[in-house]
Length: 189
Image (cartoon, rainbow, N blue to C red; front, top):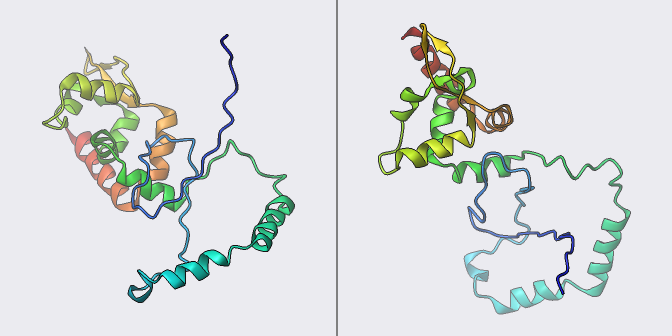
């Protein structure tokens, strides 16, 4: 017999990798936190079995009971689980996960917000990408209206509003300056 059940799984990843998961710019599911190292492992402790044995033995039943008490007594009445914050750690993880499409949008961000001709954007296509793959990736993030520009009906990419809010959070000052400079050049043509 077939049975359907609600998936209520929550997962906590703990990793010391620079890029433990790949996140899209519009990720709404992951809370990413960077933790400071409490037990800095120096070269002398790197293979010190006694050191790690003592460390693991410090996690006693009393430790776990205190930890559980801490979590149970913590006031979370104002917590909204649907509002996932954009932490610096998450920004860094998204930046290392960025696609060529993200880089193009960030470099020409102001143009994508205002509307940029598809023919112009096609010139930015990475050489190793097929044009259809490139267009599909952009259409995931942009609408493609056809306004009249200089009395000619022209297809343009306009970055979707939900995408704009994510790119606004993602861009650093240098990228904003580059985008603004590119926009000023574009306006002159």
